[in-house]
Image (cartoon, rainbow, N blue to C red; front, side, top):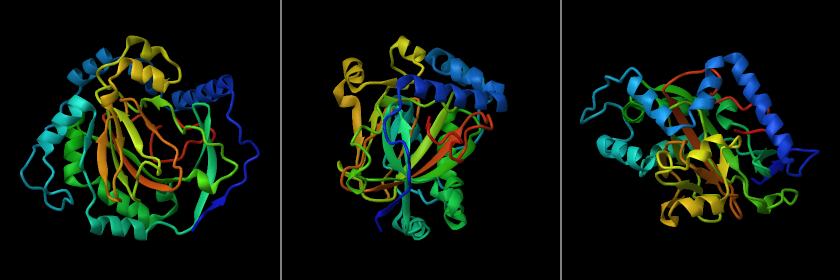
Amino acid sequence: MPASEKQSSDLNPRPLWTEIGLRLLAYGWRTIINPRWLVMALFGRFVFIRSWVYLTQKPSTRPIGEHFSGTIFPDLDINQTVETLKADGLCLGINLPSSILKKLLQSIPTERTYKIEYSYGAQYATSNNLALENPLLQAEVNQLSQDPVLTTLAAQYLGTVPIYSGSKVWWSFGLHHHARVKPQPVHCFHYDLYDYHCLRFFFYLTDVDEQSGPHQFVKGSHSQRRFNYAFSPMKACTDEEILEYYDARNIITIVGSAGTGFAEDPFCFHKGTPPQQKDRLILMVQFVAHDYGVLNDRDNPFAFYRP
């Protein structure tokens, strides 16, 4: 079914100072909940501090076995996956079995209601977190988040006992549905700070090609970056800045059929591209090393700002 429109009185990109003000408001809200989050948000931008935290945290004692009972990823090589993640910040090939994909899709509501959100000066059409609105879908996602291969991967990459900090299932709607949404980039390249160390698993629930809003990623940018990037309040760079510093061959565009999955360190530069002809449905599961109590699967209370 086509997306149904949620009314919005303001569909123009917000001025830079307005967005900075909203961002500071969100930061203040998170700091009130847990002041330790602000310390992480300020110092977690620096690669050498992130490395120091990694070396001083309590290590995970979880063993890596050859077989994991109940996993839906029995053929995934954990050691190779972790090595790839540490080198590139990204690992492809963590794909959902067709039976699991079918169960997830059966739990997705047929009606697609969209809302207008803003990010980095652009507007885009997205949905709420569907997993929060559907207990059956939430149960399926929670079961996926407990998969022993995924949790072991998170433990080995994070270097400590992983904390499941939330999940999200959402639509990104194609511009052909929404004449009121101007065809602007959904994001510029940016990185996210959810913790000193974080790992996300993404799964496409629809076929994603070049016209369906594929995810783009800068390989190796979690460990190689200009020092001044840490001082940008927006945590973002233009395409030109990225191409100036990183080889174009390191910019990965991820396309694939429904069920395609990958693991990503969100400290790497990445961005979503705006769907042009097809809507995109995607699932995300997130693990962190520290729980600040402010970053989970709930939609941001500041609906006009998405970090």
